[in-house]
Image 1 (cartoon, rainbow, N blue to C red):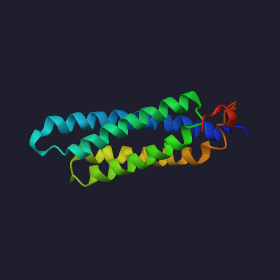
Image 2: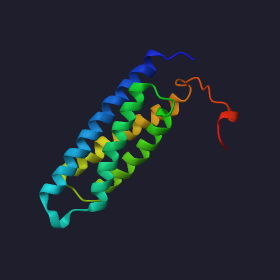
Image 3: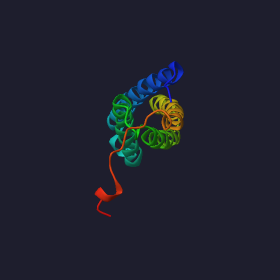
Length: 134
């Protein structure tokens, strides 16, 4: 199946929003550390760190054209939504709300790419069942 200009545009947009989400999560994580060490929500901070890592993994797999890109993007979408919900639950802090918004944008983009990528990215697989030690 041929990759259309529209899909290439969506893939590029997904890469860009993943980079933005990664940067925003790291910035927000650092902001949370600097605000008040007594009120730091460690669970939220771990979620932001994990979300940032997953976003970067998506970018790397997209750039590589990996056959695992779609499933990775779908997992990234789930992680971004969880992070957004956790940020929103912390109240009306502008930095946390901005992080939540970027995470939701990233989730939408990753979800789209996750659904579309399986028909566009396939690598030849030369592994036979005999070569696997099962």
